[in-house]
Every structure is written in C-alpha cells, then in structure tokens.
Length: 255
Image (tube, rainbow, N blue to C red; front, top):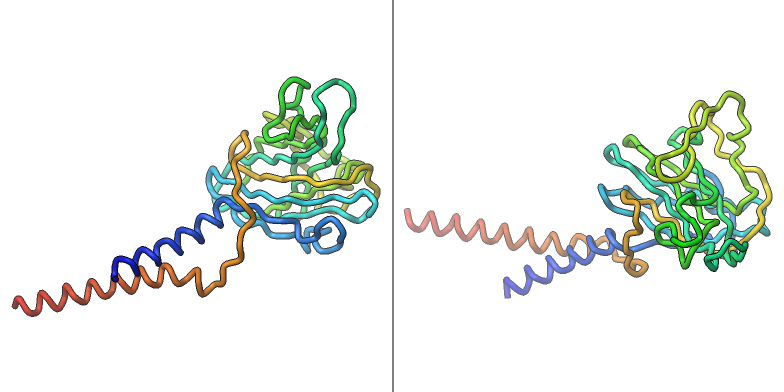
C-alpha cells in the first residue's frame, strides 16, 4: 500500500513537471481577437527559459487589424545564447514568391523596452534547405540568433510585415549582423511601439530556445489544479516522514 501511494505521488509530480517542460501554449488572443497582448505592458508571459530548453507558442497575426502585434514576455535565469524561430510562411521551395502563409516580422526588446535585435526573413534559407522548423520551407520566416542574453526579462514581438519598430527610426543607432541570422541593435531609447499597417495574415509558431535546431514539443497542456501539483510531492514527503519515524522507534526499542 505504501509503495503504491509513493508511486502515485511520484507519477503525479513527474506528470506536472513533464507538462511544464514539453508543452506549448496558445496566443490567448486567437485568430479573431486583438488587444490582449498588443504591447509590452500586456505581454503574454511564456515562463523562464531553462538551460538548453525551449518556450513555444502558437499564435495568429492579423493584417486587417493595424494594431495587432503579439507581445510575449519570458525570463532568462542565467546568461544564455538564445535563438528565436518563427515558422509557417510555407514557401514551396523555389525562387518564385510562392508563400502561402504569413510574412512575419520579429523584434526582441529588453526589460526597459529597448529594441535589441530583429529579423524579417531568415538568412538560413537558400531555396534548397529550410531554416530549422520551417514547414515546409519558409523564406519569409524570421530566424534570429545567436543572441546572448543576461539574466532578466525580455519581450519577443511578432507582427505582420510592414509593421516595423519605430525604434529603427531613431538617429544614432548601430546595427550588427548576428552569427547565424538577424540583426543586433545598440544605442536605442526605450520604444516598443510599431508603425501601423500589415500585409499578410496567418498562423505562426514562435519557439524561443537555446539550440539552433527546433526542439520537439508535446500537446497543449491540460490545466492541473494547484492542489494536484502539490499532491504528488506531498505524498512522497509524507511517506519519507513516516519512514523516519519508524526508524526512530526501532532505535529506541533496541536501546
């Protein structure tokens, strides 16, 4: 009975941990709404990026809504090299402009809402190979990295192309190409606003990760009540406490 109790508790604890590590989340605006995460202030939080891990979100950008810019916040606990991959432009793999999905623009801001990096079209794509994770090709998919980030909070913003960060219009900024793809920005003032507009609409997947290649994801998480999350570790702790008490009694009886 005790072993079954312990096994049940450990399974529940591992299940909760596995869901947190592998699942993706949905843009809570969906395809038909806007306004909920259209600024850094109202950004949808994705969590803390684990060392070598990934944060994945499935969203939708609407060109018909000039204000629709999807902001996601995330935290970095220790210095890390980070890659940002937006997929689903869906080119057919030729020099012709056959894209059927969204032409997205990606921008990354620090906790002060200063633009630090951006990308429009992946420089990894060459019409014969894909940038990591593009389905099936994706020459209009942004890919940004490797971006070295210090511990702190950051924002990733995705918009339909033609919506561009107003920070790029500031005088005196400097830009540097990143090692793999994208542009590093320095010398900008805090400004996370975008120009209005947009050219294409569609679904996208954003993955923020510590590796160049895509990381596999599981199904969307099933909400687990906080009490259940505590149930597994609680049972394991209860079993350990009872075992310690039994050993103490045995020692006293031996004396």
